[in-house]
Image (cartoon, rainbow, N blue to C red; front, side, top):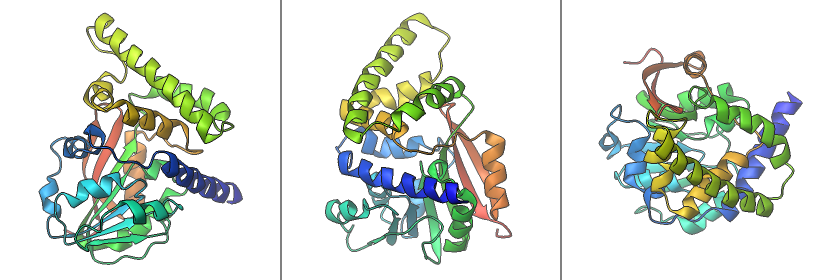
Length: 275
């Protein structure tokens, strides 16, 4: 238990530091509506959130909050546990008075009667996800929906192996040095995509993601994406059956699951017992 608590606190601290370095939100694909919609393919219509009460767990840089705001919900809650909440207060507009920021963990925030709750790129960094998910279930209306995006194991096997070898070293690097490492890694990823596209006509690992997401982003955002992969002390890559079993154990039914570009999972969930 103590180890899980240390992991949780260090993860929150790491992300707080990360937003101070990579908290800018430049206009481009990384912050675009196309990127927002890319998470779910055809499994969700974001126009459903217009006029509704919407929350995001793990608001980080505010990127997803801005994406959500484009659909004019009635109110928006941004939940962020780190000291990055101070940057959110400074950087984000209040979206016509609709935004409320809450400095709390995923397992401790208090919201009721929420129509849609987004949790993008967060659950896989939480060492105790069951507590977080059960609290999210409490925040939703009976007909409300939880939308979750997590790293997947399927399609990422080689990358997960490399992560397991590099992460012990990367944890020791200060953020400024890690940023330099991310710049080098960015160039290697671009080279990998270029060579792979020329040589492997039948496809290669992560081709769809690199083509549809990474290569469409500007170089600053590409660096941030890589930094975001290397910085956290804890990351979980979920198998399909694992993520389904997890949310079902925490009082949710899975309405739809989408294998995003063959490397991650997007789920639409409803609270059990509700139609």
